[in-house]
Each structure stands twice: as structure tokens, then as C-alpha cells.
Image 1 (cartoon, each protein chain N blue to C red):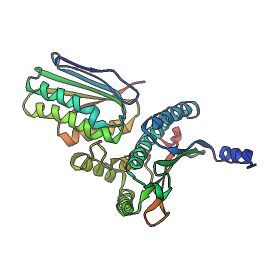
Image 2: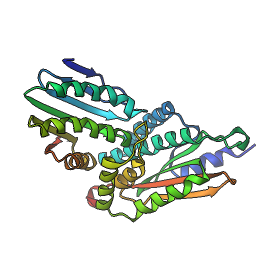
Image 3: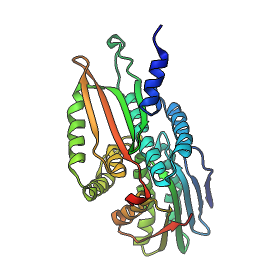
Image 4: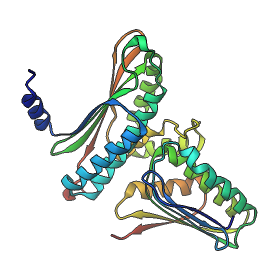
Length: 188
Length: 126
């Protein structure tokens, strides 16, 4: 039998607050958010940090939900197109949110360009960029407009980390990571 | 037509608009699955209101959090009020944010800036 104790201890040592792998739906996102909100209440004393982690997580998960929804992966690819990965970890310095999902290769270039643009901007630059898209951007019929990643960068104050691993000629696995530094009274 | 009311739910805010008093309130969380669908009856009601508005319109907004797909819809809501303002009506916007929530404070400043109308941006003490 697999050594599940070792697996459990490894998760414990990595301070994993939550992991999920499976089909991401709107209702599931709500359930995960409720769990995380309760845990944050218990382990995080700083209200500002709690609020940031929660808000950024909402954006990450709803983003994920929308994108998984849009990614039509034919059955013969056997990639379980609607499923995704979510990981929430914490250490002394920060909370770390990680998501992973399949993406069509032809969407990568645009996404990479957007990430590079976001990561090149200062705090004020991000704010102006957000306002420009909010005021002039084209929105989908659900109201999404690619504001999500700008918002995540703005609220976390950190660079977006990402990777695309090629799975086959049609699809890649897209990993996304954002760190949210813990706010301590001294740092304010 | 006089009153538009929605109770707060897990993903949607409390909304209470009173046409006679000219008082519009929105508060809580806005993270609906489909923001356009959620805000569209609100925008429709405001279209009617703007045809025959109260002498003075007071808008009290007290979001705890809204997702980015709500942010465009919220801008559309404010555009209705900004139109009234530009037509010479009295419109007063109070944008409340929870103590030390700089992100929400900035969001209010951003809307005020985009619309070109003044907001009173007010911190709610703990």
C-alpha cells in the first residue's frame, strides 16, 4: 500500500491549508471559499491579510471556473478538461495560492503577453491600467474582461508567476501562482 | 416602481432603492456567477427612475467586496447617477469602506475619477 502517512506528513510540513483536484463549478468554488474563510478566521490574526487572501482567492477561483468552462477539450484527448488543481499554502511570510488547468495552446501567447505587461507595471501603473480597461475594455456576456489578473497583481502587490507545460500539440497545462505577503504591524 | 429591493445572499449584495425618497443603497458582497444577469434588473429600474428622479438622489454604497466581473456592472450603475448629475440634478454619493480597507477605498476613488463626479469616501470605524 502507498505510504499515506508520509503523504499526509508531507502535506502537513508544507503547511498546505487546502488542496483540491477535480471538476470546478461555481457551487464548488463557493464551498471552497467558505472553508478557507473559516480557516483564515482561525489562523490569521491580521484582518487586512485575511481580507486580501480571501478577495484574491475569490478572483483566482472564479477566473479558473470561467476558463475551465470555456475550454472545450474533446473526449479523445482524455485530459479531463473541466478539472483543475487548487492549492493554498502558508508559511511564516506569506500565503500562496496555486491553480492549474488545461489550456488550448493557441491561447497561450495572448495570456503570456498580458502577464508580462502586468508584471512590468508599477503599483500606480496597474491602477491606471485597471481603470482604462474598466472604462474602455470589451466585456464578455458574463461581465468578465481580463481584469482578474490585474486585480490580483494590484491587491497582492506581487508579480504573477506562471508556467505553461506542453501536454500535446493542442493543449498545455497552465500553472498560476500568487504570493500574498502577511501584513504585520511592524511592516505598516 | 417606487421600491426596488433585494436581500443579501452569499454571492450578491443587499440592494434597496427608494424612488420617492431618492435614496439608493447597496451593501455586502458582490460575487455573482453572472454579474451581467444580476445587475441588469437594477439598471432597468434605474433607467425608469432617471426619467422622473427625486429632487435629490443619495447613493449609499457599502461594499465589503466585489469581484472584477461586478466592477463593470457597478460602473454602469454609477453611470446612471452621473448622467443625472450632468443633467443638473443633485446627486450625492457616499462610498463607505471598512476600516483600513485600502483596496475598497481606492476602488471608490477610481470610480469617482472615471465618472468625473465627486464621491464622499468614508471609512467605517470598527
